[in-house]
Image (cartoon, rainbow, N blue to C red):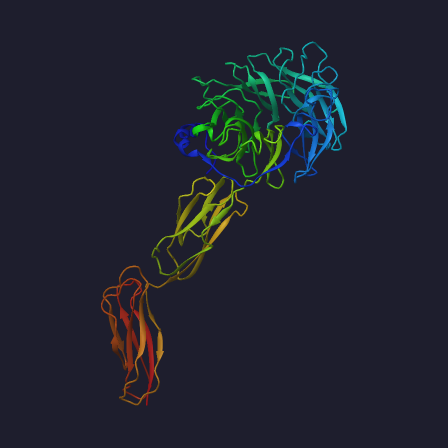
Length: 596
């Protein structure tokens, strides 16, 4: 169940598309807050700060009269949904703020698309108490040549500096990548010129120290790019969208957000348009530019799986979660869950306007819940904050399997254990294994991913190799919180055929008189019939009756009655012996008695 190579995945995608999109109805969605004009309009993505609270900005709204519809706000929200406006932008300190980051100094940093000294946007620092410092006001030059940050947020790199993009204008009018020190000294690293992209939308710093991002337009075909850039400004275009040709750009076009680096080292992102069904894609790309379309949206009739994807994050369970701007059951957008390994997609929530519209899912909180925002809602059309608890839950059908007594070397009937995903998110089945493969054998039909409500099974057989009680375990490992789930296996190995009791002592008898009979049981522990049964005794002992014949059915039993008739005084010894087709033949019992 390891990671598939890009070429191998490309070969199997056609065969799995028919079953990869699944609709789930998670009953864990909560609207925490509905915005009004005074506390903001059109909230952006949230972040969770080190104090456990969430912080964010609204693009518009607030109490400032300096912007039509408000200049935007900076707010704090508790995990329970209590929202406090910490700062209302005033145009002079910026307007239309973008997503924030929390820097290593504990303060928040962000950009605004407008406002500031020259009206071209700003870079700002703000404390958790709402005290704002403008670090940089974008250019005083005509047409803001190094400004217009669009919807891009800053990142803080490992060198302590901040990096970001401007979405338009710049030296060539098509956007730029910049670096800025914590004190506000800004350096333009790259100005886009069209052929290398246009309209960048955010950066991520990878484990190799380089920065990766996307542009919504430009490139070799004019439909956007994925690029790489160093802190020194060394720039490379990794992929130009629509490179695969064909109607509507099967590899997608117009990415609206940047990329994230997955735990496998590759990069993942979304295109707003294009793909097989023309409603956008999730893509994967290597640091050398090999791109693979992970999922094309609108695969389901009516785009019930969503259309025009935007946000994408990788959660603690390894799966990707994100949102689509529209589509879903009500056409107002979705939250989806996409398996990292097999690319199964589950629609976790379809917005219906009463709970918001056009969502952005931006953060998985420390408690495992997901928090996001919407641009609009039915109450006032100004946006919401929502929470979703999405987690797989594993249930196994039994905690133990008992195979009873089984003849040495024989194979038992198979016993089945079911694993069911009873949670609200995809469950990654990472492995099914036995602790003792010498005495137990297992086969399973578990796929790499179980959707909500799906189950798979493992069948176990017992073939004992040594006499006595034998224990083992069957273990399922997955991304549920209870992983691993363990089933105890128990069986006892016995001889193929047994005679009980194995000893018998008769009471003293007068010479020539016959004792009451003692009863012995012959048991066939095998799963095949016991053949060629012959019974004999020795000494002063004799068979008085028996239910045994020459054959004994599988797992069958028969009885033998033996009496004692002493011929001499003193201790008398003898035996009962049964010969048959079992490999431990003959089975014998020692007999003693006293003559007087």
